[in-house]
Length: 122
Ligand SMILES: [Mg+2]
Image 1 (cartoon, helix red, strand yellow):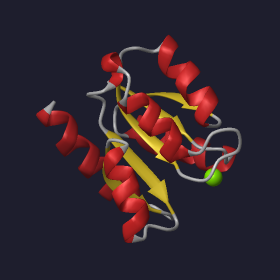
Image 2 (spheres, rainbow, N blue to C red):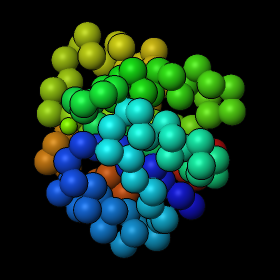
Image 3 (spheres, helix red, strand yellow):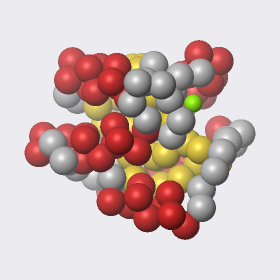
Image 4 (tube, rainbow, N blue to C red):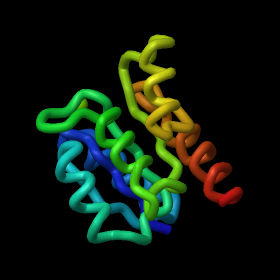
């Protein structure tokens, strides 16, 4: 199964790619919200999105809300990676289709377990 990772930090993308590939997933990457949508358009078989919040050009919440409003991508589960997750942001995320929050620095085993659980249901 294919996962789209969107984060402006190359270090984090490399790390996420490694961890997700160890978990048996194929990974495609986007460097910001604008690019994330472009990559998704070219990879319509993406099963899940892991997305950063703070990014240049288009932030994660805006990207996720756009994805969530697009009929063909509406059902893709979204995990948000963040350092900050106050109630206001969580409410915004929920509207944008975010189903889980992962706090940085993330624990790979925990993240993989959560992703596995979600994908088993879909
Ligand atoms: Mg960032």
